[in-house]
Length: 130
Image 1 (cartoon, one colour):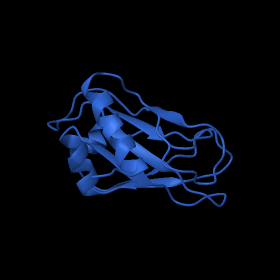
Image 2: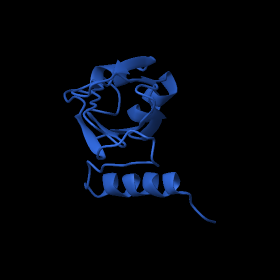
Image 3: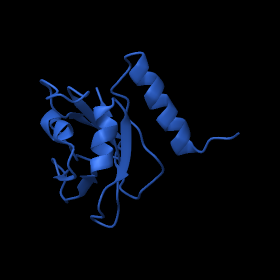
Image 4: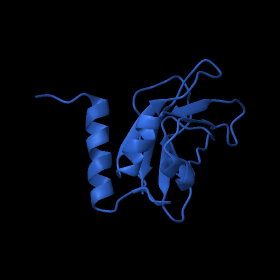
């Protein structure tokens, strides 16, 4: 069985999480954005509010100033949420995490979504329970 690049990178993220090597920056293909691959940063810490995810980390592929903060309270609430990831970039994108995505994070999992289009490109965004 052969893995494509995305599956391979997702397996690396899973392995990195299991041995404490996160954050791990990921880039899934060239989305035309330019710039370097970077980390969106820690998306919140604190109590898990009954869920299984006390904090999250977000990695934004082909990043050039975008940031994503997903509060632990949002993960614990489990509802669909849309976040602005503009950060210090000169253009905006948004990322939507569905209720199913939040459940995956509550279970300690990882989700990868594609941002909205801005400046004629998108970004692959990976959010991990950390």
